[in-house]
Image (cartoon, rainbow, N blue to C red):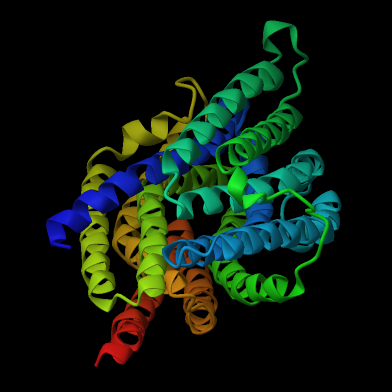
Length: 450
């Protein structure tokens, strides 16, 4: 396949995935925007609660991520039995994990206090998590089933189900946060209920589609029967993927904790800037999913040349997106941040002053953040997860978090310093992961043909 063919194939497969990630992101963004209208204290609490929730969610999502390359490789080998087995055991592991971590969501308040958060913010965040935590069960199941469908290149349905979920979330939020349309005004709790409802609706839609459109896979027939061999295979791949994701997300969650030490206004500014950076990151994440699927297909066919050209094409597309984002964040910072606040909010000037600086730092890490997630996607497609996990942990926890603390507090740079540490951690990960893919993984796949 020519490079033009790769660009075309990546675009066709990737646009719905990018759109799906943006729609998924819109669910969290809706919470942030509406709670920002409701009050800065509510926004700060849900920023903290959201970071806490997603640390747990994204570790569990490792089982969904593991299903994607396994199904892609099995599809290339035309092995429908392996498709069913890996997906089913991904669902099993997701349910088991959610049950194990639910106590951490139910009793979040003492954990947040141990992290030295302000008691009132921690109390509100814990109230949110007691409700929103139940959404972990359907959310993880949806993650597995979306990965299964994406690996089979059924990305359009993934997009439309996520868009529908975003609409449901927006409507439910508007009703329950503010008490519109005769609903009670529940504030933060209303946002939590909306999140749970949204995840349940998403799960129902994706299950109905999978059962009706892919009956040959019989995903839910005799679902209770164990398949310990495949259970262990998904576990072995899913745990390092989950830990890799956990290492990165917990770096960002720790940055939220550090921003909380600076006060509610810096924490709110951090939440806004992080949401804007996350929106553009969804493009890179969608491209990373494409990298996983196409690398998994190449692995199933033992096609090293296809892998190399596809990797170059996907990396180039990520770099173009990074350049556009850098320009946007440096030239339109104030209008973007203003979208999250009421014009007459008395704390608006303070949040703007901090947020503009944070967006400048976000522009810096776009390049390295995109590069590291593309490398992770390619490596996952080849089911190479253990060494990348170590590389990521070193980058995020040995470099990123200590650097954030050092520049933010001993050096007195505040929020800018905290974000500078994020840049350094992501840059370290990008260099090591790209080096592993090009210097080892590509050569390994090409080895039998040499």
